[in-house]
Image (cartoon, rainbow, N blue to C red; front, side, top):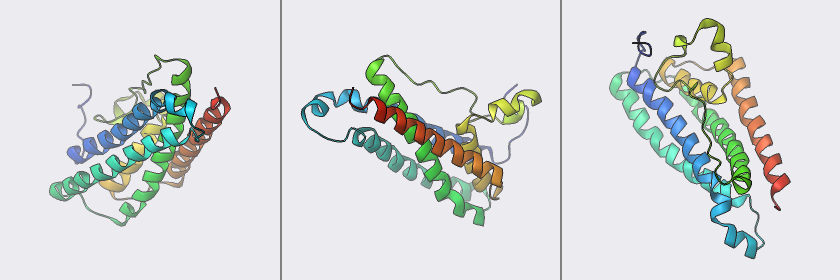
Length: 194
């Protein structure tokens, strides 16, 4: 009664778009987190750039994500969601999502080497099956700081609403993606030899 008190237009597309973005993120981070630990014997015997291991896992997850976009597009057509020119921004959203997920993956892969029980639990503040309007008005700004919220809403905006995101949204997604990638690279490189 709390989550579904307001009607969501094109709910199946709304739900699936949130699920596939969050699933990609979760798969990328989960697989990449163990990439160094699982290949420790190879890493200690052969001089190879360690960045290859989490990066390859992230690319593998990206391929799965791209395949999962096909059912989303089919669902859009079946449910009557209008295909608009805003859909041309989909590649930009995918690049930003990939960079953000790769950054988090690098951080978690590094931490997992030192703290084997590390498991990344992303906040439940990501609206996958509920609208952000259920949050109290005064707290929405805090929840909107979640980069996954920004990326999922980016996809929903171009897929469901058929409009390009505002410059502020593009800036938030870009800053979150590149910022997380830079943090991930710095942490990964700093502890790479350890």
